[in-house]
Amino acid sequence: MGILKASGLGLLAALAAGVLSGCATTPAKEPPVKFNHDPYPSTYRAYPGVPTLLKGATVLDGQGGRIDGGDVLIADGRVQAVGRGLSAPAGAMVVDAAGKYVTPGVIDIHSHLGDYPSPAVAAHDDGNEATAPARPEVWAEHSVWPQDPGFSRALANGGVTTLEILPGSANLFGGRSVVLKNVPARTVQGMKFPGAPYGLKMACGENPKRVYGSKGQMPSTRMGNIAVTRQTWLNAQAYKRKWDNYEAKGGDMPERDLAMDTLRGVLAGKILVQNHCYRADEMAIMIDLSHEMGYKIAAFHHAVEAYKIADLLRENGICAAMWADWYGFKMEAYDAIRENIALVDRAGACAIVHSDDPNGIQRLYQEAGKAIAAGRRVGIPISEEHAWTWLSANPAKALDIFDKTGSLTPGKMADVVLWNGNPFSTYTRPERVWIDGALMYDANNPRLRPVSDFELGQPGEGDVK
Image (cartoon, rainbow, N blue to C red; front, top):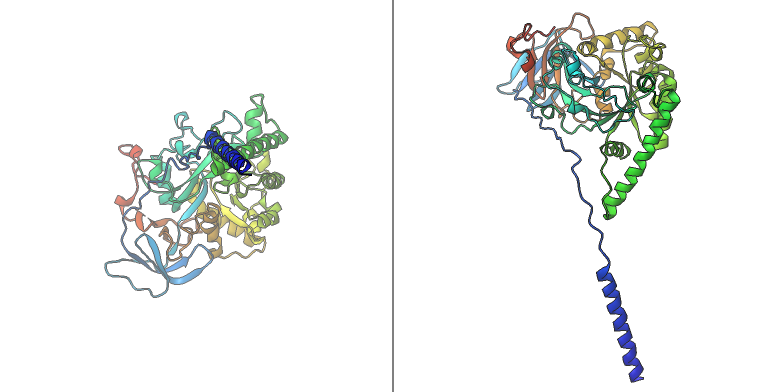
């Protein structure tokens, strides 16, 4: 027994040694390598401001509220209080706003300023990477020219304090968008809205099939549009699975792909889809496609037929960014109606007024005025305070920045416009504009008319017409 016992112990020891030896020779998985998902971060810093009390105005708070004879107090870059009879803190600037309106700054969810800047010459044509139908690897911010005089015109003439710059619509996947604060800066990073998520510009309809069909390649039809889009998403899903597994377990690092990085961000819910789409039937297909592939559409842009599917938009929590009366310039823009915005709004969906134009961005408040009138003509009562949600709260929600701006709520960024009259009137202009509490434009002070470096020394310098 003693000999057997000793032999048994020796065998166990040998087995244990073998096991240990085996463990020692099995290569451990390398831990996952972290890479920077934000290599071009915002360097935005608010301009200095002073505590300011606007007194006695008609206040539209941007989320449906109205105060006649109201006051707005801003300080330390934030909205501090909104109400009646507010007292000015020591050293505050007090502005008599009686007979005028105060609103949150206008947010344009669809702009190409900087990517298609003024002057509009071929050398500045940087909005469409029209070299393949799927180009999610390009980022609009890498084309933005901060010296574009269009930024200051949007500020001074339109009261625009925040805007989303999108790539163009030549491609099914046009690339990443970027959200900017409308301030002078030397670099685009100095304008980037802190904490705003990226967007992905997608397009359906005539543009992609025309651009690539004319080159004799797919897509040349609407069915081709969808086929290429679906296959691209399938590739993105496979890429996401590889990277999710690698980041969870380590091992061999998959190859980086900038295009797929963007689409993986969408599938993870970190990048918002902004979808150029005109026709109702095509928007419905894109909604189905988003369900199939597992992502969410934040907003349809140029949605001239949104009124036909307002219920679908409401049920899916998708905003519609629309013009008041710009349509008929191509077949997919043919079946629009002036009541589009009002009908979408009445259905309980999220309605937005957008520009897609360097001149239109200067008059978005007048576009909203047209939409109010069109709605009222067909019996839809729309108040001024509700209509302002189309210009601030709703675009802020579609950009996922409503916790920071888009309404005159205490604690939010002090992005505020003082209008010299009713802002839905043709004759009204911004009188003063504050961004993060800093006075960036004053119609009565020539020193506060922004001039870009590009304009310095040129005829019309500082002209904001």
